[in-house]
Image (cartoon, rainbow, N blue to C red):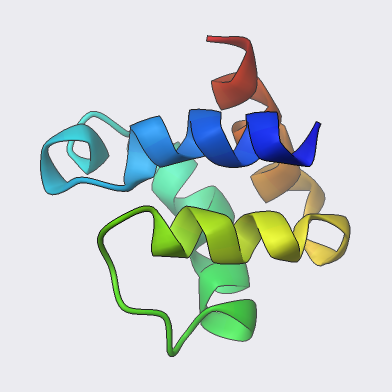
Length: 73
């Protein structure tokens, strides 16, 4: 399941073009988690999504919800 979340979220967040399609609410949902768990992660290549996926159990409920919704698409 974690691989599915990572893969789906990677499609949404990994590239600049795709990241522009995120709503402000989606970006806001995971920005705190990114700062807490993945601050040193360089963007690109799905690295941020992979990092968030590795910390999925520790993410805020709002970020988990956004990643789970991305998985369903």
